[in-house]
Image 1 (cartoon, rainbow, N blue to C red):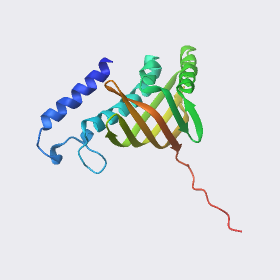
Image 2: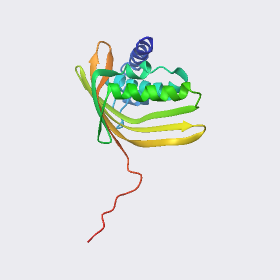
Image 3: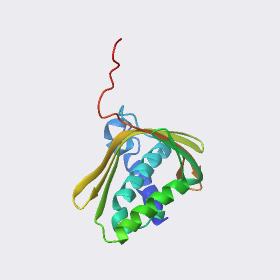
Length: 180
């Protein structure tokens, strides 16, 4: 909760500092991909995604699944590469990773979200973004995926939580149809 309050305070401080100085003086973290200034709520959605990526990257050190799961609604329903996913599925995956970490297996995770394009109206928000996810075991890359996501957020109290997320992995090679 303190991390979220710090994020809000940082965003608010940036807004106050920028005042009416215009788009040219707005930091990149407060701009969308086109360079348009983000609203405070849009900036909070983008910040939420960046905090999630950081929590995923730090999971092998913190061993704190709640630091990731706290950004998802209890009724979360997602789709990853055509497969349904719930909060329970995420809890199960994190428990499996934690079991491997606790057994002494050195595991590292790198999670990044890029080109975040957030929008918000009232208590409803959404964002499109690109992701990159790596799992490294014993210094060897074991899993790599990258692709695109669309997430739908619901504002609960002061937090933007993911209600639905649809992610598709980028195809590593082009698919060509054989002409007949």
